[in-house]
Length: 109
Image 1 (tube, helix red, strand yellow):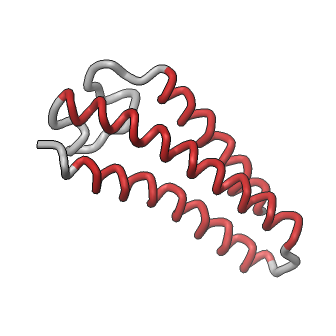
Image 2 (spheres, one colour):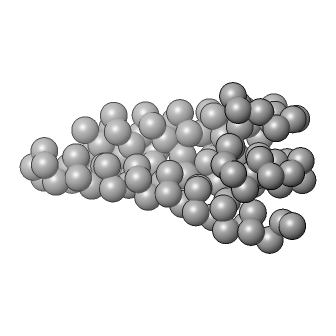
């Protein structure tokens, strides 16, 4: 369970974060990029959110890959606890990206 929920999801986060960092959306759109009410408020906020969230997404991806591999190879627990821990790590990884990005977007007028 750990290897699927966290390590593979973390690899996807790494890839998406890298692509968003390398090829950020230039204009505000509703298709590609970090989209929230605050990030779409201005072009300055949009550009900041793309750069900031893509770096956080890559860090979150590394965290998920590490926790997935660590959990897979070192924990011998029931399926319930394994899936609970893996889901918690996943929610934490996503939550950190959104929380910190939105917190930083408050600083942009």
